[in-house]
Amino acid sequence: MGLPVLRSDVVVIGGGQAGLAAAYYLRRAGVDHVVLDAQPLPGGAWPQTWNSLRLFSIARHSSLPGWPMPSLSDGYPTAHHVVDYLAAYEKRYDVPVHRPVQVTSVSRGEDRLLVHTDAGTWSARHVISATGTWWRPFRPLLDLPGRQLHTADYHDPLEFAGQKVVVVGGGNSGAQIAADLLPHTNLTWMTRRPPRYMPDEIDGKALFDIATRRGGVGDLGDIVAVPPVREARDSGLLVATQMDTAALSEADAVVWCTGFRPALSHLAPLRLRDTEGRVAVDGTSAVEEPRLHLLGYGSWTGPASATLIGVGSTAKATVAKISAALALRP
Image (cartoon, rainbow, N blue to C red; front, side, top):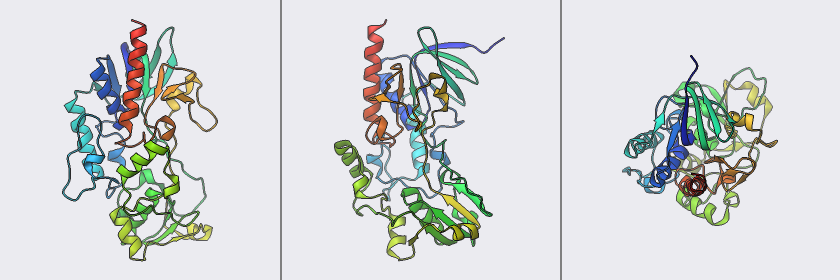
């Protein structure tokens, strides 16, 4: 006997912040939906991050639609606090999430999209892909004698105590992980150009406001000076150097903070991705397959849509578009 074929008006792929924001608005709109999450526990990618990670904004400016994130006494939420919030959010709004369910592919049926999983196939009138980027880290391929890992693999500085460690990357992850490792290792921080810190008063809320108004924040800098980074920088100990192949070869470990790509392999059967791995969208709807919506992947799917505070507006617009389409085809 084969696996079952189930039906839902909307299938949301991914139970992280983007998937939950979509589910919130689908519930409000009274749209039949289901959320499929590959992870065994709530929280999306947040349980995978490094232990000292803190958000750029205080809790009330890091919230999903409908329910503010509970505040902390010291302001900036930790990744663990975000996981607790997302788990509670899921329960609060009774999100119909199935986990762990691994989506293997999305294909076209006769008049619906088919979402194929390791637990059966879902037939949907619309699909929202909300898988994010964390699961597809960009790893440079270099032959080095020491250990190589990516931002996605890094968790605790004590694992590298006393070692020669090189951190490569001039963005937020590179700066935060370098500051985390600084007291415990013989650290070298390498960047392609001198680090560009944003003004110290800039936080995630300000970045969201600027991105929403102007569509980009690149001219402000690359690094938000969260307190640990600011302290390490101001101490004069967190200093970046240029790329140096010899230093890479001498390191016990290299941490590549080189970013992520959209995790869209499940969409391969639809043949929608361009040479850069992206899908052409109108808002969040795929231009060549308007029943497919991409939510939370970055600025190309909505200003600040890869952030907690930013994903709500694009989720709301996406659900409004889906609701209108469903109303035209009872």
